[in-house]
Length: 109
Image (cartoon, rainbow, N blue to C red; front, side, top):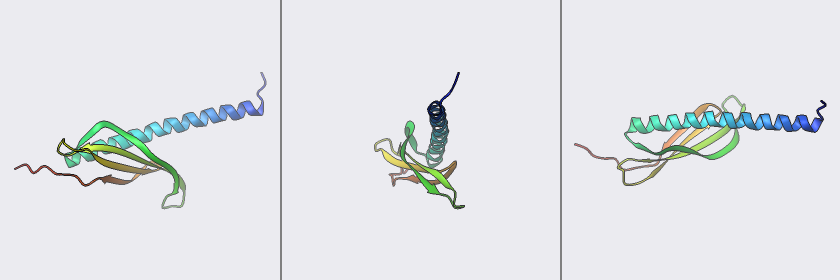
């Protein structure tokens, strides 16, 4: 059996795409766990129990290394009436920013 250069290229491309997909699943899971924890800590309800990839681009970290910046968004509720937007940014495997849109707070006495 002989493999031509094009066959090796296609096989490498398929393996690289699979590795990227697997890595993306791990990053999405970390973003979801972070969203759950921050909502729980703030007394908010994470809606739909999901995060969605909003942006994907290359960016340099503080050491000058080029890494993927992944920006995830999610929705949460504070009173149960309105939906608000939250965001989590990850540079490589590190969470660089968490944001919760200004929201109503229940005043319970």
